[in-house]
Image: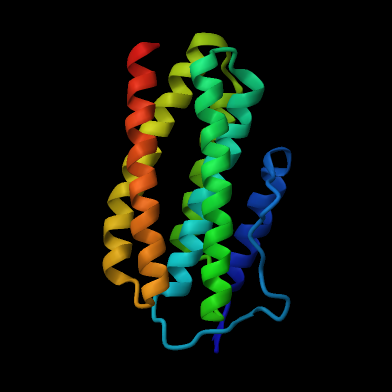
Length: 187
């Protein structure tokens, strides 16, 4: 058993308070006993936590886009991102349950969540065309980063079920990136 770092718990709690207006139905959870069940899957629980954070960040920023954008292409893209990332979030939790693993939210993952919150706070200050361009800029940046990280995580994943999910996720993220670039170019 690995003890969950108290710093991560506090950072997690603080970021959940900050994002209260952008919560999703599938929130990250901290085990009540502050312990993480871990088997022979090495970094897989950390990868699961990273994937949950990636999905939640995209869902939260896309919810904001739905409330702020009036551009039909941007609104349609935001709907697609919410649906696709909710679906991936559900698949991630199914894999976690299948492996009997609890996602671990490392300090790197918590920093990723904080960056997502920072992006949302920046976007909140803008509207109209400026908002649309900035949102699509973030989608390009975030999906490019996700592709880079997914390539590494596919290699590190031990469980075949997780590796397959990551490969599938990579294909979807690449598609999201291509769509974001096309929309950005048309703005």
